Length: 459
Image (spheres, rainbow, N blue to C red):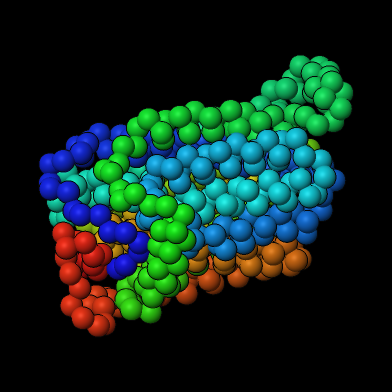
């Protein structure tokens, strides 16, 4: 796959070894997602406290998703042209600005701008770290090196960061409320800019500084060809075009992209609707934030467990493809349970809903590493970040539409069951085994050592 200037393939044994690359990948994954986790538990409730309705809040999340979708391919191509490290550092700086705006913004335009910047950061970050890890492992151990274990640990680190961050972010406003008058003092002192529910986002901005410093110091890369503005402008469209051809050329990659779309529908429903259910159950926003934080923490831990179990699920199912089918079946079951209990508040219904919530994240966690293991065996280093961006683009586009739809629909089972139907459709795509990849049309491509990008020869 073409995607900008191709690098000569380093001889096996060069660069950081597999264990070092894995540790750095895990650390970067944790540091990027930890501040996002801190803002998850309070996001919807913070915007509600600022006077925004559910439709407006859905609009804010749509700004995030649509910005990420619009920029996925350009920024993925940018990473393939100028390198993984600078793109990740820019993503951290954008998140720093985004969390500051979200934490301090009382006006709708400020929140929308913050969500847009976060969406841009998401687009920038969706491929470079994983692409850096795969490139480094291939450089050290060759193209047949095991990837699934490192990808699973990176996914587990992401889930652990989200779990810990969500628990901390949801607990902070509750802790501030335990001290009489502290929340009111904080609000009065800052003229209403800082309220207890905005503290997690502001702390997340501080963590982004640590993330940027670590990326710049730890993610070493081989020298790339010197690229000026003209080279960047010329190389990115080529990477975008190559990314858009992925799904048309390869049936397996097409399945992966459609599966990412189904995951976007599931996540949009869960992230938009669950905080309100928690607040309704508890009666106040702060208590709801704490309950949702605990629930989200459990969900992300389920995702981490699913990621760790991904290699085992693949061995048990017989292949990575079958593992994706089984995993998406769990997601469908979880969303169905959440839909069937949408109007119930009894202890039994709450237990069933919590079980469904856990199944959604367990299934998504198990599906991800197996999907990406298949993806990385279809593309080479020159277009790896672009391929991941196409995958993220599929998720973000559907998440934006599904979030707007869920916000417009009446509360109840319907939004949940529609999301379950989308995931079920994605699961059914994996009933048949995909054919081997077809070689790209046209002349026989040169090898990477000749200076040209090629499609991976792995089945």
